Length: 267
Image (tube, rainbow, N blue to C red; front, side, top):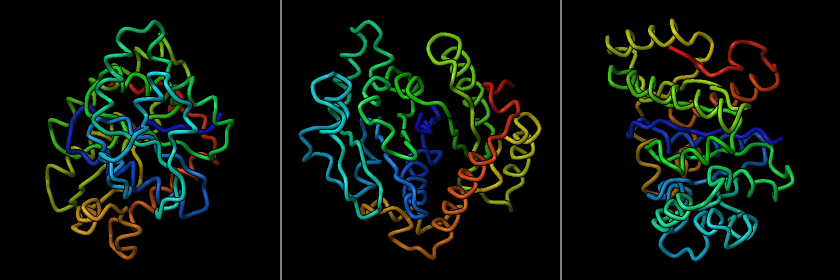
């Protein structure tokens, strides 16, 4: 099965979409065939990839509601080097559709079977809520990356997400595991940042990625230009950090670590 990473955190503003877009671009840059799936009705991963979301006639909405095949909805040949399954506000209608369907949590997973393992990596940008769209993403994934800021309230949200993952593992997707926690908007000069980072290491051990994503103005500017940081400013600290993250991801995958990382994290 193609390694499929859900990028999720029910708390907004933690760098979830930034991570999805820039990780996809970085993996493509090092030679991987990557599909980025936008599962957020805000469509930020779509616009951040240089695609005008409001002009789209076919999106992940039509795929989830079983109107078209996933291959028809995928946009290829993006400047960033990855393929995109886009989204826009129509995705709200797909969520309503899913709520009425039996086995609704598996629609995205079923759609993925049409891809015949063409991609080396699939990355799914989840909405900042634990709704049916997120459940679909987690059911279709085998690995979860949790981006989070090192602040107090982020720890509370993390506990809720880990609990949800445990329920999904027990009910619909026993393959899902917490692959790692990515510290974003990281400022080592901040005392609270260091305290929360130490707490993460204490409770989650090697699930915490060594790579940290710094606060970086070029990284923040890139989405407004419809580009990942790697395309917008390859020499920026943000672009370099996500390249490091991609390399760490591949390194972990190649090592095939047999640790408690294969089970959902618990606090």
